[in-house]
Length: 185
Image (cartoon, rainbow, N blue to C red; front, top):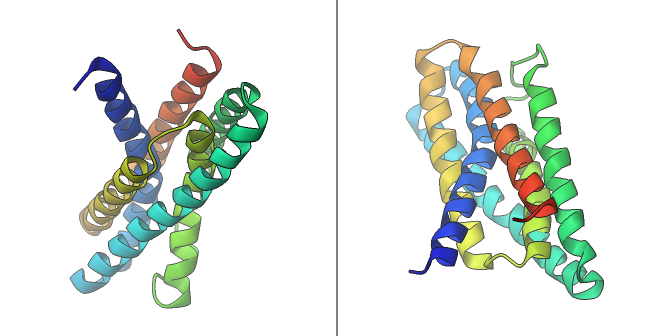
């Protein structure tokens, strides 16, 4: 592996971690609903699938935008990451940490969409930037599934004090990547 490939892997891993932290924090609150283990597994898999589908749609759209707009596309992608990171940080300071829906049936789909909607924007940015599609969606899906499971399991054991901090951390990571796109070294 060359340095560029290692850098890309590290960047995608950190981005998938940042996006997964949003799912982790939501899962942390949801885990306090005293879910059965079978429900926890199902929720994690659904969240993982949505974290594959949403960035895939964003990547495809981003590649189309990139081919039409060329150099300005990286600026758009960087701005999207900055906005998403700021929004995640801002929402981490909101006092309501309770989930607004039970993760069953339609509620599970609504939960999955709300947890993975930000990954569409990140996928759009990465598509503009020209990231590898399969590697990106695979890492996003696996990381979000594992962090959702971790959040749900931890939510069963601890109070909700970690949730807002994890979302803020994810927002800071996305902010950093937005700045990196806007001001490459």
